[in-house]
Length: 271
Image (cartoon, rainbow, N blue to C red; front, side):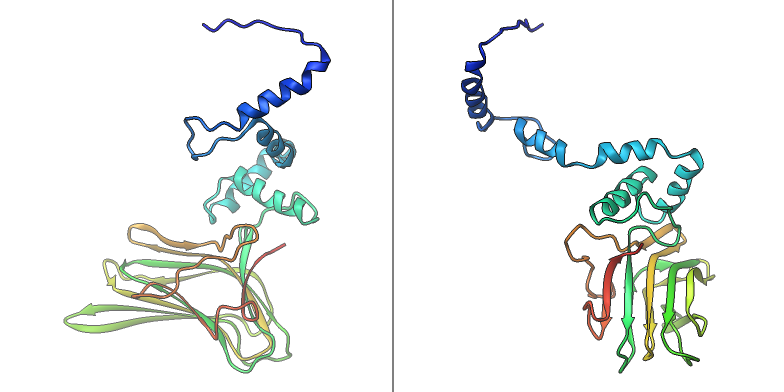
């Protein structure tokens, strides 16, 4: 057991002691660490001053059991725990001068995909390509549609195509969902391919915003096949960084039309 003793040093020795400690702080020496870096005492102090977690933690403790359960239900779609989602959301709102904490919403969490066609000359759409799914398949999507013209003839549409082989033939199964011809509040829809054991070698889901002045917000895309959750997209992104997505290659990934650009597609925090 290490021996510990105390020394009282005159105040005039403090600057010298600090210089000695600073010198040792800057030494590089072996240390066990899970993230491969070692923080100095001063860095740890600065990090503690910068973090919002102690403040947010107090808000969390003041929530009722039912409120915490609401956060738990909302977090099911984005891969966080209820506490992690609460911390991430509240920290964002504190840093961006928004009221906090907010009420969680099962339709959206932190970020959503915003599709815009505000100067329409042609349709705006993206396709999500997946492969090797086995039926039955369920697709869930949350969306909100805003149309800026009167009496529209077209609206937001999702078309899903599944390709499979049978008897040497390449066969197509197709399902379509069309949103109402009006602005729509947050809605969750489900598209089902109820064909047990049918193996789809290629699955194409097209999310189409027609050539009318409108926009749509999308979140919580989920594909569930015979074996459980196959794919999910909560559109999370890191602070001050672009959303990273897998570009279409060999039957997998995203393809955006006309292009993945803020004029048409943007990942935004939805308040």
